[in-house]
Structure formats: C-alpha cells, structure tokens
Length: 370
Picture 1 (spheres, rainbow, N blue to C red):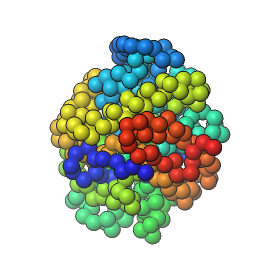
Picture 2: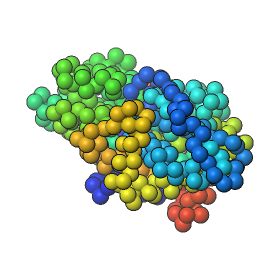
Picture 3: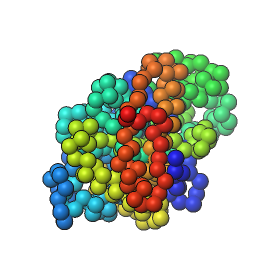
Picture 4: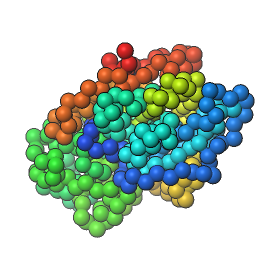
C-alpha cells in the first residue's frame, strides 16, 4: 500500500481506533443532525455532463474530512465532474449520513470506519462500498497535568471518549486491556472510569473537573490543550506503521452501479485534492478553516487549528488492514460479534485513477469485492 504523506513536515499524529458496530458514531460527537447547504448546492459546473445531472456528496465539518472541505472549497472535485453538478451536504454524526445514503438522498460520503462497518454488516453487505481512503491520524490522549503525569496515573481517573463503542472508545478499551486493567465495556466502570461524553461538551467537562482527560480526535484534543491539558499519548504510536484509518470515502452501491463514470470523476478530484493539500499545507489549512466557517459560522482559532492540522495525514490509501484490526479490537472488547467484512471495499476505480496518475495501487487487505 502506498504511504500517506503528512500535511506538514511535522510528524503525523495519532489516529482513531477500533470499530464499534453497536453504534454508528464517527468519533466526533453525536447529534445525528444533518443539514443541506442550499447555498452551496448545485455548485456551478461547466463542460460535458456525465451520466448523472448531480452528485450528492456528504461530509462532516471536521478537519479529518479535509479532503471534502478543501476539494469542494477549491473547486478541485467540481473541475473533474464537468457538467455534472455537486450538491454538498454536511452531517454532524455518522448515523444521519448513513441514513441519508440508505434513503437515497446521498450518493457519496466521507465517514469514519465505525459507521461504515456497522452499516455494511447491518445491511448484509448491500448498501455501501468503501471506495477510497481520505485521512489517517488526529487522535490523542490528553490529560490534566496536575492529576496525571504518567500513563500509569490513569488508573482510578475519569477519562472521556466520544461515545460507547465508537472508534476512540474501542481504542481506549483495547489500550486499557493491554495494560492489564479491567473495565466493563457497557458501563465504563472499572480500573479506569471511561466517561462517554459528546465531543461538543468535553472541553466544558474538562474545565469543570468532571473528567481528568480524554481520548479524542482533533480538533477536540487541541481545544482541551488550549484549556491547559497536556498530550500524554499520540495514538499513532500504537500502530506499527504509525497510521490507520479515520476517514473513508463510501458510495451507495446503487449509485456506483448506475454512475461509475461520476464516481470515477469524484475520485480523480479527491486524488488531486489530496495531492494539493499535501503540497500546500498552509494554504490547505486556511482553505479548510474557511470552509468550516462557511459551514458552521465560526472558524477554528489558531491555537487550536495550528497543532491539530499537522496531526492528520491525508491519504488516498484506505488503510484497509487497519480497519480489520479495529474490528478485531471491538470483538476483543466484547462489544460486537465477529463481522463478515468481505466485499466492504471496491477499490477498482481508485486504483484505475491512481495508475493513470502514475501512483502505486492500494490494497483492500482481502476485504474487496470478488
């Protein structure tokens, strides 16, 4: 598999972990609110129209969805679509995005591994395919330095994760088990108190003292650091190649079957976007922040985005082997039964685009379509 290139020369940080198949959280907090951005729908398109008039693309207003933020903001995806228009749609959590995909109101989405797997298993492999990678990294264990100075100090403390069974939650449970400590995965009670807390309120929980730290993705980790927390562990260090999947690109199987030319064009756009992000990290960071402001009404402060941005690696590689490992961690934590993920990936079009661009093909780790 091709190696992901870091957003900056700084060493890439951490990454999400283990799969929750019980819950379809994406690792960024909760509310399953989705909103169509009417003012950005039907992005102006020029040139020959492909087999669909419009492609509906969903993503989160999060830094780990930088490919979508920047690709749409800079027009890099639209350029590849010619006369086919983009209708962007933003979501606050995985369940609402999966619901839109299943309901036929979304064609392609950027989403984390947990909801991807959960939806694939629940539909018995009939609703989606993972067609590309997008991001790796961006997950850290941050703690109150007055209460916790070493990893061993976590015993007896209250540490937040975004949601029971989500990717960060399972990663933390796996780390706890490797330490030889015991925690009940359902209640979160044990040698460490695992407190499931929406990322939106985690900074306030930290300031109030109701939690002693958190295992969370960016930009929540950097928001906590801006409140005085310290990074104790970068999850990247737990992975042999220092990278694993946090964001995939998925597609409705129906849309893929009927509009493969549109899907291929979108993938050409994401590959070119990823190249541009990696070649222009400062411009890309500014572009992503501008997109966040347009989506949410507020940009990230420099003290948050500056440390958060280089901790995320942007990559075309879906890092399929790491998704398999994350699933195994969830099984180990007794949160799920062993899933059958055969066929969850279809990297045919991505590898076609990569080959045409003179890039090495990527692997589906044996989980591809037959």
